Length: 403
Image 1 (cartoon, rainbow, N blue to C red):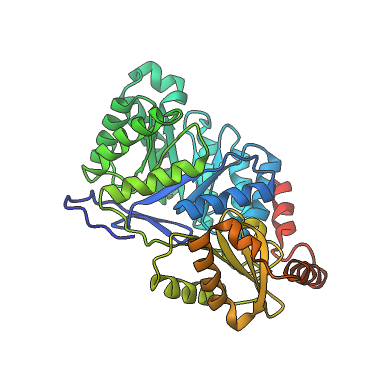
Image 2: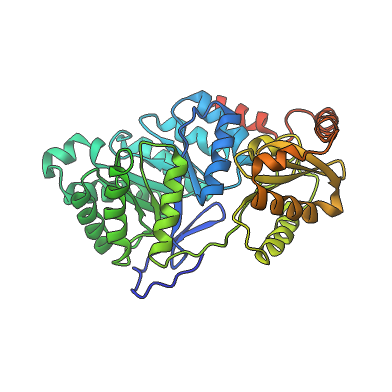
């Protein structure tokens, strides 16, 4: 990501959402939110990988019940991007989400309103070094604030500032803020006011924008207006659509504004969890260097294990997963070749050229005889050797259940 816009961006503090810097001069990042039931671990991970492949730097998941939070304990170590737990009403779920290992919390001041509960979450987040987004929403304002100020920019900003006050009481300032509304003018004026009053990084979005094309127009009108004024550090399109469209729209907007440049190849890599049998970072860097020399409009995944990799990254055009000193090369989640570990990147490039030139179906038709069976045998052997809980999710779930 590069910033080449001619206007001056608003100066803000910086927070780290996992490995992604937000604010403080960092490139504007793109966010989206899963629409799966978080308790569906495999389905949620598949959507997270699809979002990462579409350009999402950070992904939010609902933490709406205990089953969702327990699932996050399994999802977090396997996610390719930092995850934010979206919490409403029940502060204990926010505490449990921290036990699950999320990179950030989103709290809604409109429905978690008891000061002691807010301070408890902030204190725990402070001790763990986890940031919180104060997510003010015009559709769920605290009734007392709305009664005093009406549905106005002042109301949204005052809601955020009151939450900040509770955080300050416990010495917590690892914060980013959003003041979203479905009315574009209200949204824009609220962020302008907030930008004048605080120096925290700002998360931009028009809430409940609706389905495309109207939702895209509304979101772009609000987000682009502010970005062109130098306001905003991370963005999310809120569309009634497949969330992959949100990530793509965010990417396209940043490109249009000169805030992001991307190569023809989208490369997604797993975070190297307990099942990884290779140095995923080194393989991903080698693959990135190889594809930078080519002009292939394909989406490529580099996965550290053959057990989960092909399934998690099945939305990618193709990818490679490592296991038992071999690489399983897959196209749309289906294994087409098994190669020695030291040939993985070369094989990935060769098959990428096939996909780019002839299409996915043609590549699948060229699958090597016996590759799928060999891959299945490798997966079964690894599960037998490593067990079912290589990421020690059971320990996190036990912590969650003690809340």
